[in-house]
Image (cartoon, rainbow, N blue to C red; front, side):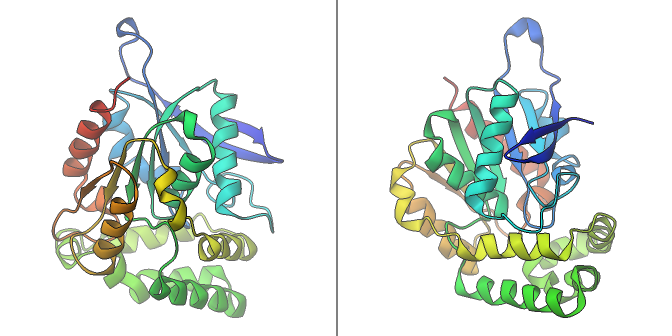
Length: 275
């Protein structure tokens, strides 16, 4: 198993590359997962597809998956620094960055802190700060975790937040997926302190006023209605030269609900930003 000792912790990562070496060195493409996720969430649909065209790098962010889970030291800035140190470890000078939810926050911070490293940036249902409605949900997760533990919170997570996480159409097409997701999380639990630390990192994150500093080509992916669309559009308008893709009838995880469309849309964007 590939681990790298970075920033005082062991970070788990995987590199998948099925490109043709005789056609030249493949560009690096980094996928960043969301809160209480891990790199395996990209393996269902994205890694098999994109590794035909790019050197795909996935990792478990600090506190998640098989990476070390410290009791403290959680911030989006530190997570972005972890990613930078991993790319140095892998001798990657520049990379495309794709981040979902919390992973998109890490991608935003990475683009601001390590501008020269970013070929392009894809933000999937993510925000440059935490909207008030989400702040309330996160605070409840923190309070519930302190009261009854992360395992108990996750046991009913999809039941409590299913309407916010998945579109009604996805529920009908894949009624078994939310239960599978719950079992996936329960089989790979974070310590209470790690989950709370990651939640607090999200709560305190705010780079909205700095979005104009982003120089990398950016694609904002969001649903086409509600707060997600409004905030996604506002972010896209603040990032110079960025694009917006807002497909209809999707929820929080566009890459899971409509993976074929997502993959083709992102591939076209990445190819349009070749050196």
